[in-house]
Figure 1 (cartoon, one colour):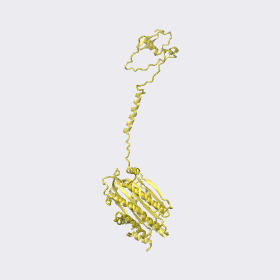
Figure 2: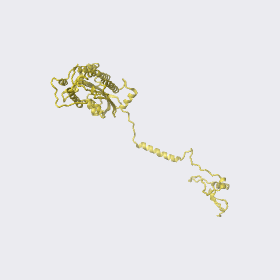
Figure 3: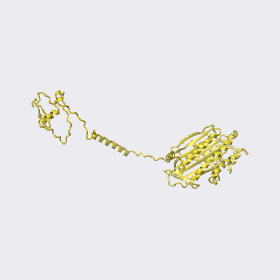
Figure 4: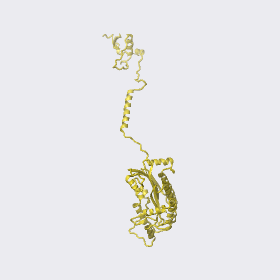
Length: 447
């Protein structure tokens, strides 16, 4: 083909156009080719089915001519979009499928995180916070409120009696639920050691413990492997400095078992109070026993003689052949077979209320009496007996020390600050010490 007749391919046709010799046809723009083809009656081809249409791009040319660029404006490139204006829909769909698949796989293979139901202790805490404690509240909440109220009253009265040292007040909690408040005074002018504690315990009884308790409480379900339980108590022990002033002990408690929903299925009350003098003053023992008897007689005239005998037997040191003190009252396992729950709760309240009138007058009379080394040594020997009973025979101490998560310092609060064990000590015949021993070896009916 002659150089003066260059050709262009357009729509499958060979298009000839005469150009000046030496004209570079590669500089022609597509639009110029289209215009020329149209003038010759040549239409663009239809796309084949297996081919995808591509946007037309300008031929790569060298430096454009000013006259041609001015005649035909350039066609701008348009960004590919779909209907609706969504960019790259297939890419977005692919990413979404992968993401959703990952989430579903994680849900199917990860362990389920179940939220545990609140424990009985947590539900009780919520009930106290939202509604307070009323006569309609469960007995466990009412007993807890009672012992805390009495603790405040007793500590305030003892602090007024001995303002030389402030009570140390410790509030503690148990991981399984509950807790307590320990109020302790040490090395005061009146009391060598004084402790007033409240304790609230939530826990689980294993089957062996249930079987043991069923001896006294037939209401306990024998067919379960474990039971939820609640225990609340107020414990008090006062060890005076003066040997003429007696040590005193008090404990009132409530125990119940529950199902998983917190419904009570067995309950009972226990407690008592007793006097442990170093030197015997008959008037003190009589006054102490009379105040207790008056509280008992309000509810049942058979209570005092029955519970006084129970106390003499309970606070007995078998290996010494003597009682710990001159007694008081002691009872345990009082449930629906004794009286209904409200009557027994009222009885416990009256016993607690009788303590301060029964003891404060005694300690006030004796706290400033003169004494010497002999009296102090005898006091230390008698405190040794007190320690022996508490660590070897006391059920409350044993239960507390064997309860998981127990606060040992509060349990052993009952022990005196000092004690003495002297080898083969013998009391002189006719002495005040010998008279004290004779009463401890043979209980006396004081009222």
